[in-house]
Image (cartoon, rainbow, N blue to C red):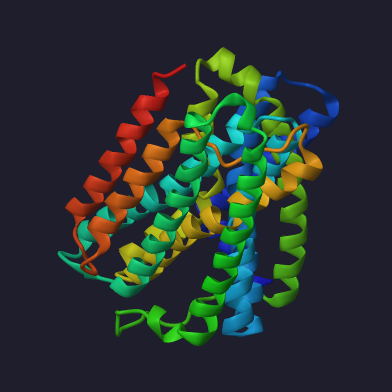
Length: 361
């Protein structure tokens, strides 16, 4: 309990937890507009993601490397997953697709780029496990292929052949799920040594929350995220029209940054401590998980919870952003060394995507 209270006091992201009860009270009393609720729910999701991340670490520390790694992989993107499910239930398929693409690109370009920049400003050159980076970027290339094929087929096929798109997407989704499960077996069991840190030094043992505290916080956080995500999605369309932002920009930029706020703080902190392997693992591992697990899961769940099933036919712009984002990450991480300027390059590519979507309707 002492460590829990100490982390609450010393971690700025947790101070934003004041927005959680504010959102819940306003929702129950209907005391604010959709746009106001949209903004407040965004602010509430950030500390909830932090609570979820820290509680997962506390549980993982008590369950061993294999189970702990699996738990982190499963719950690491729970915030985005819940938001996607809430949007699916309301039939906002284009928002879901933009958010999926944005989550992959945001984690791999923005999170990794800022980590390189922060670490590079303190250390002239930083080393990281290039084999891990190569494997993760290879997984992202597979996803680019998996999404490009149905997208191209949808563009060139005649309209009467379009019903087959659902079957193609479902089949590819099952394949991606299988690849994801095999990647867990590869990274956690058969070749776990490939993912060891390149850094020989370490700064002592990381403090985690006790198991009982972690379990309680995990349950409360997951419940609150489910409620707040519903509120957030309900206000998306109204906020998009009043604030002047397109659903593409909200889905591609805002939702991924908010959903991954806690992971970003952890990645940036690790880079500042010259533990760049942790930063690379968080950024690229989270991208691979969204691409290989969350994306096909959304396709499968859409058959049960959405007004109509979604497919893997993304717009051409999203596909190219995924492809060129993956290419940029692969090219900048293939030497296992980073500097602050590599971080600038990654952020610049991400900014190009953001500016484009900001001015699009």
